[in-house]
Image 1 (cartoon, rainbow, N blue to C red):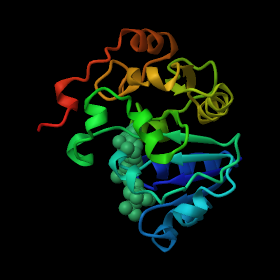
Image 2: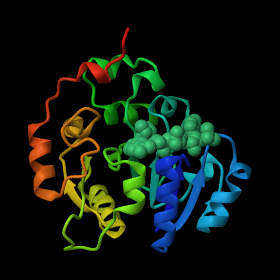
Image 3: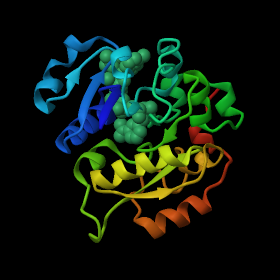
Length: 220
Ligand SMILES: NC(=O)c1ccc[n+]([C@@H]2O[C@H](COP(=O)([O-])OP(=O)(O)OC[C@H]3O[C@@H](n4cnc5c(N)ncnc54)[C@H](OP(=O)(O)O)[C@@H]3O)[C@@H](O)[C@H]2O)c1
């Protein structure tokens, strides 16, 4: 697949490496420009590109930057994506990093807020696993201890594409419902960085509360 990754940090760098290892065509961008990604490009054989190039003509685009910065991405960035292209949102709201986002504080699921900034539907995935575990803990199907990852989105075909990629990376994809349910995998919920296997993840998603815990709210 042609995969564009916007954000080349802990998660973006990991997905760049792992998707490239799997044989996908990966283009990766950061905020400072492709010349600053020469090392990552050399190590992974991914192409270092601009943000707009990372979103052009791709089957899958991953947005993996500090959530608050999603609002600063170029206007119309995803307007020309093919209708069947999937956009993955890995992002979490960290008020101390992202600043207070009133809609999220008032209960809007983080990924719904991201969709509104992007003017495009997203599939929420990879937000509840630590980057190092994403890099190191993938296992073939059927292995004991295979970590399960929740996938939320409103478009079943796109969710299916993302679930297939998760399986290729060595994790069990679990359908976590639509974006209205995606608070079940947000920071502070039982499944957040918990590395559950499938059955435990399904229980954790069911046990989640929509009430945002104080530790995950803006202080003022
Ligand atoms: N780290 C984890 O274990 C983890 C796990 C799950 C989910 N997440 C979430 O996933 C997202 C990414 O996390 P991370 O830890 O990978 O972040 P990170 O290591 O801080 O890296 C952030 C990346 O985003 C790029 N970036 C920032 N603003 C940008 C913009 N406006 N346009 C293009 N690129 C931009 C940065 O590029 P420059 O360096 O050029 O500015 C950098 O490459 C966050 O929302 C985070 O909460 C993180």
